[in-house]
Image 1 (cartoon, rainbow, N blue to C red):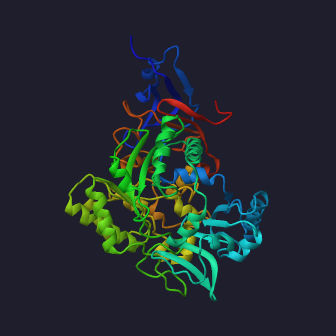
Image 2 (cartoon, rainbow, N blue to C red; image 1 turned 60 degrees about the vertical axis):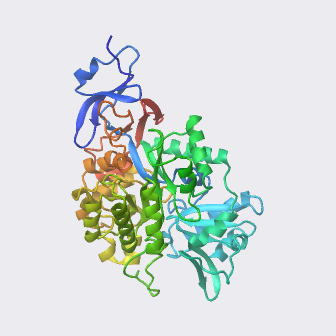
Image 3 (tube, helix red, strand yellow; image 1 turned 120 degrees about the vertical axis):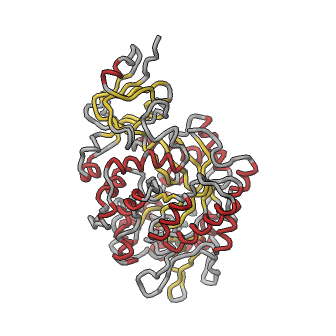
Length: 542
């Protein structure tokens, strides 16, 4: 008796991969793809218990892979005050949201908010601590900029963090003062004392965040992701939270864990002692790379550049580590067998990281280690040559152009900002760029990301060097096959071919023939299948 499919998709284009192209029908059996091909061929695999999904002209693709986000933080911040421009377009609206949350909170309870961008506020500046004091006089407040690298805190929060005008600025950090008074702005490492004063989520809250964030990803057609800094919120016990979430059926998406490797808060020694090396685990939950931060964000003027930002202060951003410290840490992780996925946005940070990777690879050659440069925003042609030669891969978030492109122009000028995140260049060089959202920095919603890959337009319509545009097939390849490649899993997922994981996204329209505007404004995920199970159906789309 021949095997019959559990699920068959037909009646619309099924994009199986960039090389594989489009087929008429797809059969899934168990957690794998059984067959893909002509409708007549697949029809013989339909049995009495097969679920047949009529695409009705909609597009099916491999499940999307957000190759860089923070899943625990996505889940946790879903409970925070939404300070994003859509929810709080003006400073008054933002302060009003914080005041409303404070009014519902007990005195002394933290009010946490995330998502503002000073370049999009009507005032064009960061809020001040006095403004937060007025909005929440009885509650400590931490307002996190959209990039996640800058926080504005009120006086109560500064006091709980033990920060005053005499506090020394820590290495790789910034405590802003104006006229001898704290403004409330803390950047990079300077935020640690305030963060330490916020009660840490317990294990159940971590698992609930993984579940909530993961369910949101499924609703967007995302079946795989990288959690880009495990250990950042509560340390090593996040590893236990992930494994318990998986054990209890509460891990909705395939997750590849990047271990926080910054000295002083690294979880790599404990992971290494427990035998948790890159590749340990299975297709649902796997130990991935080690993550070290080299700089901050361009929009926050903390990404480390070789030339100063525009403005009076002549800042070149924040250099987090000396060359010697970085090279020692990279060599240590590399020698232990870890892949690395380090945060570097400015060209100076990228230069420092490529050099460290080259030295580690020279000491312990491994042509297939696939060290990654997370974000890689302002890389240069010379750096690209070295990356190709050493097998170092960029892991960008093209939605940064959509959300922050205008801010890049404002802080760097057009000449440096427009060619940033050079996606087409990386494609042409064979650097296989993945894509993602860095959520909660940007929303994991894939449609603004697709729109920017196709148009290079910002949310305002500014075109950021149209020579870096790619086709919809290339954009899909970045979101699927190259995401899998970045995690060394291109032999098991990222395409719809027999034997690969049965991870499928069905969109509300055919992306292959839709205009970029239609994709951005008018497309949704209708159905998500992970491992051969329908795990999301948009209501009213059955």
